[in-house]
Amino acid sequence: MDIIIGNSAISLWPFALALLPVALAVQRRRGRGWAALAALTLFWLYMMVMLDKVLFPWPLSNRLAHGLDPLMDWGDRANLNLIPFYINPRAYRSQMLEDAVLNVLMTMPFGFGLPLVARVRPGRMWWAALGLGLGLEGSQLLLSLVAGVLYRVVDVNDVMCNMFGALLGYTALRIVATLYAAVANLAPNTYPTSYLVAIASAHRIAKSEPAESAHDSC
Image (cartoon, rainbow, N blue to C red):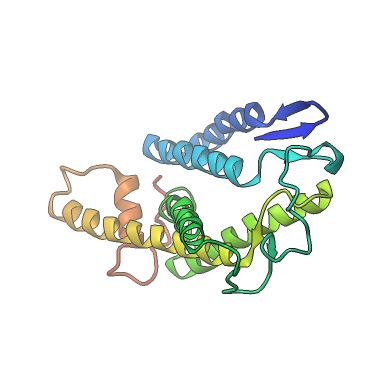
């Protein structure tokens, strides 16, 4: 998570890591259990790593971006594409497929982990997944405008891949939650973690709406 200024770089990692204990302390004061804090820690680190790969390093000035690909210009649709399902005729199909798969895999942990750290109704995960995709690509475009150079490929197709990956991850969570809830109901004394049981009950496939108190005991 580096910001390039001149010949030096400012890392945002110390700041991001310093905020984690603060967030954990706040959640602990709200009565969250250790399972909830562990989930928050993993989700926080995942988000920081993802943002590091997607948005950084960020060249703050275009005259200092000497390491960028000179073909990254604003007029080339291969670098800035706002048309859904557009296929660049100059790109290798294998590379396009690889990029799409990576974008899907990158956001699957988001869909799996978000309901573990925040109250999200199943019906609203669509909006969360769409917001993630728009947020990532929109941030790349905004940072490019600020820097004065298109330092990342901005593609609306990536938004769809990111959204699909998040929804796929959430589907995986619902499958796991359904199995866990079923086992926990059969042997409640064997699976006493109220946080995991609450999450599983809220997001199991058998229910269309989560319980209002799903995170109250976390």
